[in-house]
Amino acid sequence: MPWSAKGEQLLFKAITYNQWLLVGRKTFESMGALPNRKYAVVTRSSFTSSDENVLVFPSIDEALNHLKTITDHVIVSGGGEIYKSLIDKVDTLHISTIDSEPEGDVYFPEIPSSFRPVFSQDFVSNINYSYQIWQKG
Image 1 (cartoon, rainbow, N blue to C red):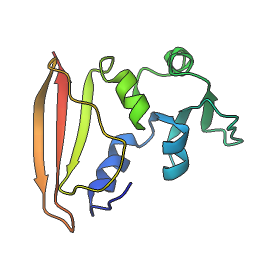
Image 2: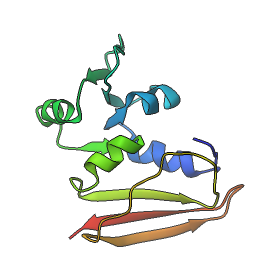
Image 3: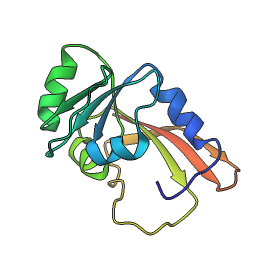
Image 4: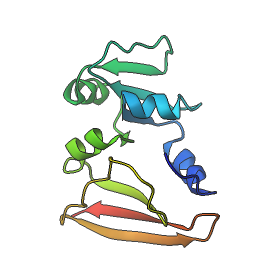
């Protein structure tokens, strides 16, 4: 990520603690395997992992089908293609909006009109940010 807002990563760590994260390979490689989390990594490459907390899948559908057999809760954690593919299939969005405009070519998709904000908090930090929770319905 092209920013580091103090405190924002702590939110991510708290939300994802002891959870399954569904991520693309590039996102996984950029964040690394955080402790006390399990990963379903989707990739079209020959990426493999010997880490027992990392499962690798050739498609989002295969990852989701497998995850359904082992957990009721999955956190979609990027990247851009994963977000775009799954935004209409999730029921809750946890979104940090960073007060910065870094250069880049990957963006979070537009939030569908089926979602409503249920919580919002602003944070003053080295880079100000806000955290929102959106629910479908």
